[in-house]
Structure formats: C-alpha cells, structure tokens
Amino acid sequence: MTEYLTTIGLEFHAELKTKTKIFCSCPTDAGGEPNTHVCPVCLGLPGVLPVLNRHAVELAVMAGLALNCQIAEYSKFDRKNYFYPDLPKGYQVTQYPMPICHDGYIDLPLADGAVRHVRINRIHLEEDAGKLVHSGEHIQDSHYSLPDYNRAAVPLIEIVTEPDITSAEEARNFGESLRLILLYAGVSDVRMEQGSLRCDVNISVRPADSAALGVKVEIKNLNSFRSVYRAIQYEEQRQRELLAGGGSVVQETRLWDEASGETRAMRSKEDAHDYRYFPEPDLVPVVIDAAWLAEIAEKLPELPAARQQRFESELGLSHYDAGQLVISPPLARFFDAVYTLFPEAKTVANWLLGDISRLLNESDAELDAVPLDASEFAYLLSEVKKGAINQASAKTVLEEMFRQGGKAAEIIAAHGFAQISDSGALQAQVEQVLIANAQPVADYRAGKKAALGFLVGQVMKQTRGQANPAMVRELLEKALESEN
Ligand SMILES: [Zn+2]
Image (cartoon, rainbow, N blue to C red):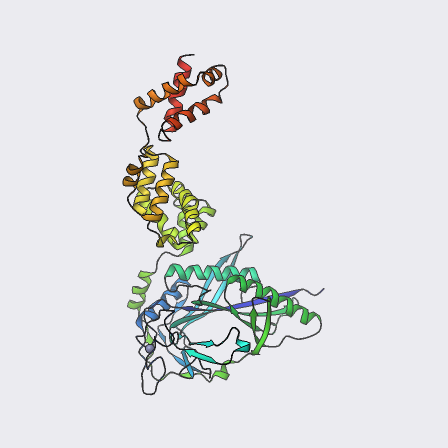
C-alpha cells in the first residue's frame, strides 16, 4: 500500500466590524430590505470616487497584529476583474502584490502536546460582493435571480495560510483558533453560519515518497468548521483513491454538498492572470506610519492564548477550566470582572462553569446579553462565603438576577434568605429538634453516628433552609456529646 501525505492551506474571509462600508458611508448592517443600503459609490455608477474607511484599515492592522504579522508601511489597492452580476463594477477592489499584512503565524497546540507552526502568508483588505437571490426553492429550478447589493463593498479581510496543515483535524483546530483570535481582537463577528466568516480549503495529496506537491483542489461553500472537517476527509479519500487507481487529480474548484457529504466539480480553477489585476487608480496608497501603528497596537486587547496563560499561572485555574472560560469571550470578561471584586478564582470559575453556564444553555443566551451584573454576583459570593446565605438560596438569587437583574441584597431580603448564623437563635431550634426526635438521639448516643445527618436535616427543615448548616452540625454535636 502506498502511503499518502495531505497538504492543506486555508483561506478565510472575515467581514470587518465597521459601521459603514469600505469606500462609502452606507451602513454595513445585514438584513435590510434588498438594495436599501446602497449609494452611487457602492453601486459603481459612473463618475463616483471611493474614499477609504479609516476604521477598516485599523481593524485589518489589528487582525494582522493579533496573528503575528508584519504590517506593511505602504500598501495599495488593485482591481480584480471578473464578470458576475453580484459585482456591480465588474471588478473587485482588493490588494494583490502589496497586501496590508504579511508573514504571520499561529502556533497550534496538537493533541500530543506538540505545536504546529502554521504560517500566514498574507492578509489583504478588500470589498465584499453583493448577493444573488434566486427565485423558487432550489437554484436548479429557479426561473430568475435578483441581485441585492446591500452587502456589496462591506469591508473584508482575506487571510491566506501557507500549506502547513496536514489533516482535517488540524484544519478544524486552526479555524477555531483563528476565529477566537479575531473575536477577541474585536475585528469581526466571525459568525460562519451567517457568512461573516467564510473558509475555503486548498488541498492536495501526494505519495509519501514524492517531494513535489500534488495537484491542488479548492473547496468552497463551507459554512461551519464541521463542514471543513468533513469536506477535507472526503476529498482526501477521493484524491487518494484516484491516485491509487492510476488516475490523476484535476486542478479545479469543487463545491461541498452538506446533504450528500460529497464535493463536486464546479469549475476549473482560475489562475491569477485570468483576473487581469491592475492598480486601482482611484485610491491613494495606504501609509501606516510608526505612530499610527503604535496607536492601533495600544488598543489590541488580551488575546486567547495570553488569557489562558494568565488564568492558569497567575490565578491557579486548571488547564481545562481556563480553556472553558477562554472559549467564550463574554464568560472570560465576566470572570475577570467578578474576580477583581471577589478574588477566589476557583470559586468564581465553578459558579461560571456550573450554574451560570447551565442557565445560559437553558436560555440559549450569551452572558453579555443577560441582565446579570458582575458586581452584584461578586456581592452574592461574598455573602455565601461569610455564611450570611446558604448555597441553595444563593442559587435562587442567582437565577433571579440572571433573568431580571436587580440587587443581590434586595433579593435576599425579599425572599427572607438571610441565613440564621446567630448561635442563640439556632440553639433554641436545636433543643426543639432534640426533644421531638428521641429515637434518633438515642441511636446517635448508641454509636449510630449517621443519625446526626437526620437531625441536621430536621433543623434545616424547621428553619426553612435558612439555618447555617455548619453551625447546626456543631451545635447538635455539642449537645449530643455533653448530655451523654
Ligand atoms: Zn454605498
């Protein structure tokens, strides 16, 4: 059996989180009525001139810094020419020989503890195309298509890796890491299912004893990292079987069909010269001087790897807990906000990954979209620690704050949750329980220590759960021992 090696490079398109489009002041909001977020500039009407959105440049640079890239001091725009109805000008404004960022990388941790150094060739800034809306259920039996240019000229970055990835699993992990980095850096919403992050795969297979790379196939139409994983597995197998059977792979673009779990041929792959790139004459070059670069670098937030590292080595969280927090930026931010006020990392993490994650799952919400306030939650934890309220009541208070907001102290008071930690008051309750439960008392004194749990339960019941259970246990033990 011949051994085969797989070589994979990935291309990502991420929509930048700007309020307006890249060369005009139309809004970038998705979901408006078709062709309502358009103007003569993004429709490419004759005689108009584009003006570059400064914020788009800053976000592209931010992405470059977050992905360890070199930032070009001088970059420029080019026209990529092709005809398709979703492209109103007949060309896309993009960057070809001089992209804004180049030579970056992500160090990807592998399952065996090693690290895969995946190089990023370049990041360029460009405009998105519009969308075609097809009549009917399926494109196959559609009678006509209408263009919607709301998305035309929304700013994008295209991130291109070197072919350093060797398996479907690595590709998926790389995609998830990249997505999280862009999310933390605040450059894009990175929602794959909504198309604000898109991924294309370039894949080739070659016999292990061959030095030259195999023929490359591009796979498009991947709208989740699960699809990326499945498509690579399918395509890897298809190419191996072709080669093993004496056939050869054709250089082409293939579409992933989620339903059938197959890729199918779409068109032969274009080469760069097919697009007749030439310099965009209507835009001046982009110059990023040291001062502007420093200003952008200053705004770069803490990235996932650094946050994970800090949670583990400074706060003493386990690798697993830290990872679970970091994977959700709102959860990680909330953790930091609570920890500043209640600096017991493990306790805060347990509540966040336990009860709060459960509430989030039940309501299918993100933590930054619910009314729970970090300082009120920190107050609740300090009340639990002081013994002023028990765990069970604290969970009820948390649920109420999670759903309706409000102040912990007021909710505790409204429910009468303040825990009885006054030993005088508890002593009276303990004595009543001892009198009313002669048999368990006798059992305990006869050596059946398990009877203590029952008696604690009786006091808790009598105080409607408000007694401090540790104090109850202590008072009961004292009473039972002394009268023995
Ligand atoms: Zn416009």
